[in-house]
Length: 360
Ligand code: NAD
Ligand code: TYD
Image (cartoon, rainbow, N blue to C red):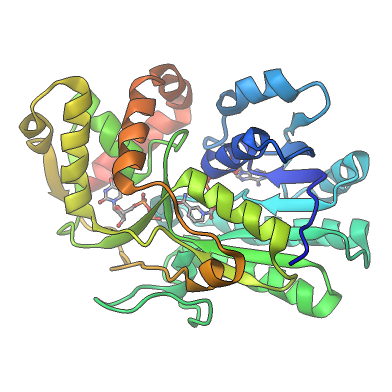
């Protein structure tokens, strides 16, 4: 199997949760010698503080942040030409299902039109070069919702159900269309739910950890029986690294933690872990648990088969859920300054709006 060298990389959305962890992961690898330009619009979810140390260590030429909207094709072309970009890793997106229900417009704009604009820039700059790669980071939510058995395979028909997943499905189709129509070298990954450091505290795990610390209610949607498959974010980063280096253009890989949890059980488990760290009784946190109005169209179960990436590329998740949750809780407890820095104006308005909706 030949291995691609990673030289001049454009990471979109690198100031967000997974993108920042991915950049950190690349620089932690002794065999990574390339340069990274992080292209990020810095929405409410993007925070340059997440990479302050990386900017300090590598800002002299191997790393830079450019505040640019991916919808700005001319801006992207300028950066691609200036940096001699040969690899794009595309994370930038509106990523929260609840927000997509309350306001889908931004999701269509960034996830669909933004991906289209990036593809147009790549096609214009790269023409028919074959030593380049556009990697599109997507979600298992494009496959819809599972019953009590079975797994999402790469061949599973798309059946998105939220404005978020519909916009991601649409972007996946555009990426594949550019491969088939214009021979653009692309790869795709569809990943399950990520957790870990630097996740914006509107997603389940960090929201619950912080609510426990603040004595706020723990809002579990519906009956808490919905199931998600959780993957530690560094394992997602290593899967993308593996795909960038070894996958054939045109290929898609599902990535997941093989780690299914009902929401209610997961929140109860988290109460125990946070209690271990703070010295409080777990019951104190469990008493904050409330069942609240369900998310409209709430997908029942996600579960991903990683058989293809295991077999073809030799990737497997490494971090156990126990280790990953423990270190995530420890990280939030020791990074309250980061938490405070992201919970400013717009975030607070969102939280208040959401609590109103949930009657919490
Ligand atoms: P996030 O919301 O934490 O970060 C998104 C980043 O994109 C932010 O830094 C934001 O500023 C930036 N951004 C948004 N709109 C932009 C625009 N128009 N131009 C440039 N930058 C823009 O998201 P995340 O959780 O890190 O997810 C990253 C990617 O991974 C997304 O494509 C998402 O669909 C996918 N994904 C996420 C998960 C998960 O569990 N979080 C699972 C599978 C796939
Ligand atoms: P989330 O982290 O928003 O990810 P996604 O919707 O992309 O899977 O939610 C994970 C699960 O947790 C999902 O089934 C919805 C549920 N959930 C709650 O029960 N309460 C909450 O406050 C949040 C944010 C999510």
